[in-house]
Length: 421
View 1 (cartoon, rainbow, N blue to C red):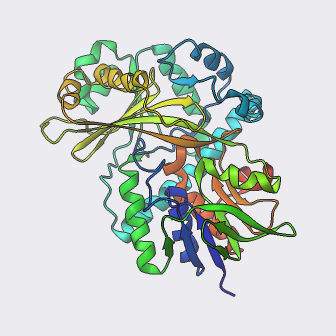
View 2: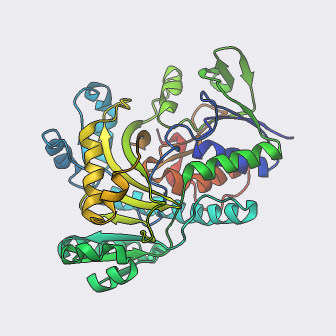
């Protein structure tokens, strides 16, 4: 019997889930409150497909970083006091999962899903001939301290047996790989190249996949806000919108950090909250010499990603509730990062049009996404991916679709179980 599946959210997670569900023969409809796909967190993110970055942000010692951030407007991870009362339960779980053992377990689970997902992203790109300024040259993480470099190598060693590929580089090797870093050669202690990583424009990828899905028969309803879930004796049978009631065999919440609000009235308390990230996008069409691959600055926890004729710098994590204000000091952080990495390029691109943006990443308290059926029958999740939203999107969609279709998933779904809430 063919299932009717309703996907809530048309960002990366929702479109990936819709595509994979359709491929398994289901009748799929997608609802989104906006006028088109990928207009929220999937709009102007870092553009990084990085299995090399599976570590959750609640690393051991994170509580000290958060306390210090209260007094530092330029901290890479910034905690603001205004939303704190509403974050107490989530925050305690976030800190409780920052032990070495739990952090390593989450890193391994994230890597398994990220690696699987990257392969599916590549397959989808090739099968559908999707163009999204894709670079297949890996990611280069640059270090100014040898101690930090050695710590990164040690962390990579922990995932070596899981399949992580990495190559430590000397300063000379780093500059040979990315010549645009030559002006800061005296500050580079070394780097690590992660060759399996890729990059590109996540918005372009999502929009192209949404078009392919619609051509294949997936239905889309735009400007449609879901206001509640239809509960019949503990089973979710549909949704309420501002204008109608829509029933389906399965409901998939892929609405990022907003998913928890729809679940709370049912007594399901999803530990996913928004963490704001920033990006700047600049025109580099006038540059003859450009960066050739994404470069991560370890000190600033941010990335500079070439995207065709554009250059994007993205990063920082701000725990500020649902505040989307573009704070000048956070934007300045990214400008300083760009100037620090590329002192010859930065003045030229910053002198032109600079497009600042902020989005709310859905961050789970234990650092792993929620994928699968909740305790409420018929209600399924694909959310909580944090900084790995694009990296894990296609894999999450496939994992979810296999479970809804009663097929054996390609990887173990247990670490991401939606009923662990």
